[in-house]
Length: 201
Length: 190
Image 1: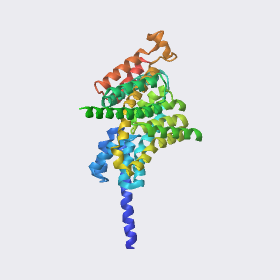
Image 2: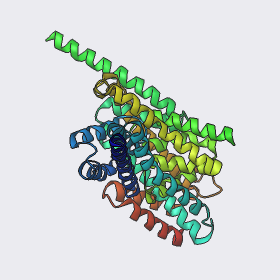
Image 3: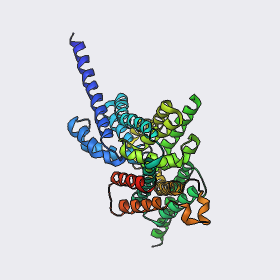
């Protein structure tokens, strides 16, 4: 009798945790539009202050790590926090919460967008929106470049990738792998040179 | 159909593992792979506009859209699971070797190359989409050398430049700009 009560208590506590993880990331994913870093404060409020799933330092560490990892940043944050707070099942609960709104709302939006007739004023509106949309992607390149183009190597590499994509028609995954290798070689040469300068002095 | 869904799944797993730097970096990579899934560059411009009004991660939205356009709901599910899988797998691996992963020299070296590359990929995506959506229907981009003025839609080019300047220089809200562009387009471009 006593035994079963303990088991009941534990599983209830666990279930509560899974539910908290799911709700935290479901909410964060539903109420942020741009994705990426915009979700961090919302998740912090729920995960740290409301549900006490982890402390603030741990959370900040995971938020930083989720940007270094490849893949979807908001989802990385969900799986890391979920795994930390609730093990494997917690990871699934948090991850599923982060995916669900983006997926289901996008399916509805795609169906709705496909029903827009492509003629008359609506076609004109679509063409205007497409022109603005291309400009906003360019703007994304600018804001990312502001932080990541800090030396000559980065600028040359960026221009090379740009030209090879537009005119060379090389595939993006290949270029990413090659750029990673280029980064390794460049940093190694840089360290080697610094060491030689130090020795000469 | 199953083969096509598996192809979607495989492509998005690959993109998920290789994309660093967030939504737009992944969007540009998806665009380079999307030709095999019959999603045109014009549809990519639509996708980006939808991304802004639909909540959630840009990359998940993009996977759902490309999957749906190619194979309906089953395609959308395959692509979304594919793009999400790397996060789950890497979380399990990284949590096991957390301390070693965080300050790994090879990782920071690799990222020092990948981050500038991501900027180049996004810029390339923007220019490729712009070239496609700004050319008047029925004309080819090559015509620009023969007759530059009648190749591009003048209203489109103006909307493109004004939107870029207002957003980059003056940080005007992107959703507001999209709505305004739609209104201007409805009057001028139809």
